[in-house]
Length: 167
Image 1 (cartoon, rainbow, N blue to C red):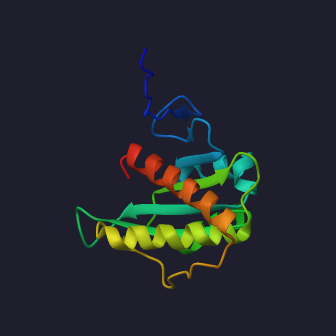
Image 2 (spheres, helix red, strand yellow; image 1 turned 30 degrees about the vertical axis):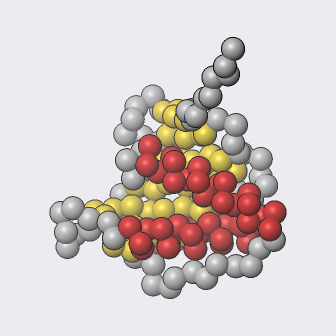
């Protein structure tokens, strides 16, 4: 008998408050990645969660006022993410939504996060579908071969989650 090849991916979407327009978490089965997405009005709700106190990379998203079709995005990183998000709440007016990527097992290092940030900026820049609000383009840090393989898997999961959410 021939074996069955399964190529599907299981993505778990959890509506924290039971409604789609509020805080939600996104996980890819059998991976340590945890995505948390929320409207700006729920920032304080996010800041009270465990993920806010972890190292991570994030994307702030808002409508581009110069174009009806394009979004403005800002990519950042923090260790932990909460102080950076609080700062952006006061200093960046454009964003209406945020998505934060952390690890469920606390294994992401600062260097890995900086690598992910540079990859996300590069990906979004090359997409020609968004206006990037980053003033500085982050440089990709040197990481070990093992870390590189791990971060590439994490990045693939981020791209899967983003495309699954329509971003």
